[in-house]
View 1 (cartoon, rainbow, N blue to C red):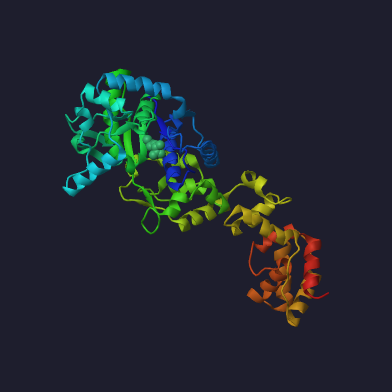
View 2: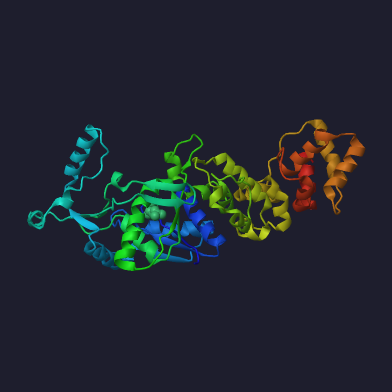
Length: 449
Ligand code: GLU
């Protein structure tokens, strides 16, 4: 069976680094198996879902290069949910409830006060037809719960966590539908996974108990509605935390825009997130094929994965130094050619800094004040400068012989005069880009001529 994975964000906000990681892993899982990666927009919460977030999710996945093979949205599938719901109701697997929020809250408080777990007491299941009719006559529309089967433990072999076992009697029958008819996430998600032939559900470990409940939903849906069909495999990855070890607010707000603004390349983020929290080394790997090839759920650890900005910055710098001219050309300053890019890229931690360094070539530059001695030296340099294949090495070799200067004394005044900076790109590569006329003029200016 071809592998089908899905990334199922709710468009109630921008994607953050945790969601990006889940999307990436689902994409890699599908790519490695030659399968399909679907984007499913979980927009059943009409009040909180926003169209601009849907657009932003698509744009972010595009920027990351995680193009889905198909897109579905839950708000377009309400009739499908309705049919499945009717089948479940007929099979006695969903039931109407009439408690108000306050009543439920009170029950919880009493249970907690008695030291028992706050599991829903199934009071609504005990109502008879007349009692239900009375509630509805009072104008109380029901919300609906899925009835868990307490018959046997819920078990699955989790792709990351191994054997899992839940006692359904320790779980509340989940509310699946609100009194206004709208859906909560759980049932539509299981319906979609069956309908779309999803073979692998890979998501954060905050969904582990949802999986227990959803496994029963899958079974009930297959029995009542879908006939023969497979339940997907499940894997739950440990959550992403900040360096301080907590799921910080900052991480929750850190998304593609922020990374882009910081000059982080998508491939740096991908290289980091592909392996963070696994036993594979995090390395600056730009080639996605390599990352996909090494992707393995078995390498995922159970401890929270620590996201460290400094590590991301280091990977980014290394990858920028390897970037081809063709990949970045549209982001480079006008006039900067391949030779220029190669000269300048080892100095960059972000592509956007190319412009600052390129100004050293095109000018104007700000030269420092030089001592009389250095001025005389630079005057000599201006006169010595000869243009050939390798003007920098020719110039410095000639000046070394003529003046006896060496090391910093030899090089620094030249660099300062030619670029206005104490450090920067390799002068051997930079000087040909500055060109003979500009170089001579800068030396002469520095010499006070
Ligand atoms: N919309 C759900 C969420 O964002 C999807 C979870 C899932 O992958 O099933 O948490």
